[in-house]
Length: 243
Image (cartoon, rainbow, N blue to C red):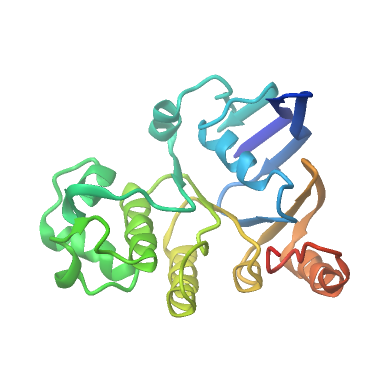
């Protein structure tokens, strides 16, 4: 279980400090597919980074499996079972896909064992296993390879920050299928930051954040119809499209 208690996060500006996350409390149960959505600038990505340990809260506490992880490093949180996938996956020149999957799994997997993870995300393993994780790969390919590493890690909580960012429509359609398979295969919880209706539509629970605060939280069946009914009326920021 992930629990945030009265978490705030501020950044310094020329005119003082600006609150990004404001006294936010949130509990996410185990074994759930959760999507956090809301208008741009509302604090969604910041919240994901606070959970992963990339940023530290200005105040408040974060608990994972009832242990206080507020001051823990990214490495310590990863060792506890928290994975984080960036909006733009990191490229590793000179590192092969096989090496990356082995690092994620923390064991010397055979090529055949590593290929199973690539197959899970819809990639032809023989075409990718020995390729470098560099600029020769498209955004969609990188996204799926990154998800393969998350599957290889098998962590209790997998956090994805806007996985649809920067990929084409064909890759996005395949990405949805990957998440649908991942939802069935993974034993832990999946937390995704997203504007996309198709990702919202496969969630167990939806959390809406605006201006650093939770404005709605509940099962998809309850929250999504409200979002679909009001998104068109939101001036300047369509909740589902990110505009």
